[in-house]
Length: 115
Image (cartoon, rainbow, N blue to C red; front, side, top):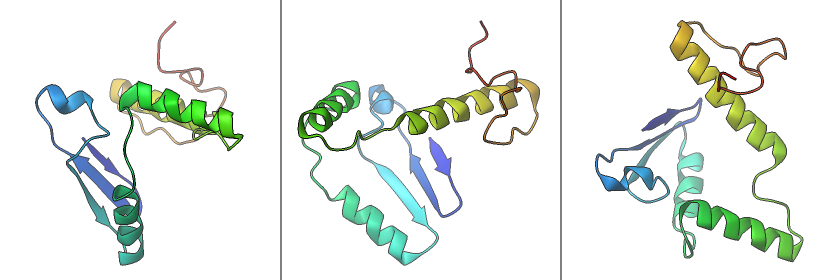
């Protein structure tokens, strides 16, 4: 899996049962500048105890609710994730470029599934 952005590229190669455990090592990073690379390294060295996957995500939500801290993922974050997946499906099926954010008139605006 390779994720390419303007200032950083993340990559993880895994071809076995661990391929569904994307939060685990080994990820590699290529950054546009040293400051961003240092920040990613700092985050990666942080405490990663606790459950992985959905169990970890729900534990993090629970902690935020209990402490009154902001949720780790906002509704806007969730919308952008669904929008990206929808754009990828549309581009793969049609071969068209898909500008983001999706316009309300786009056929995949309500999600990538065909209902």
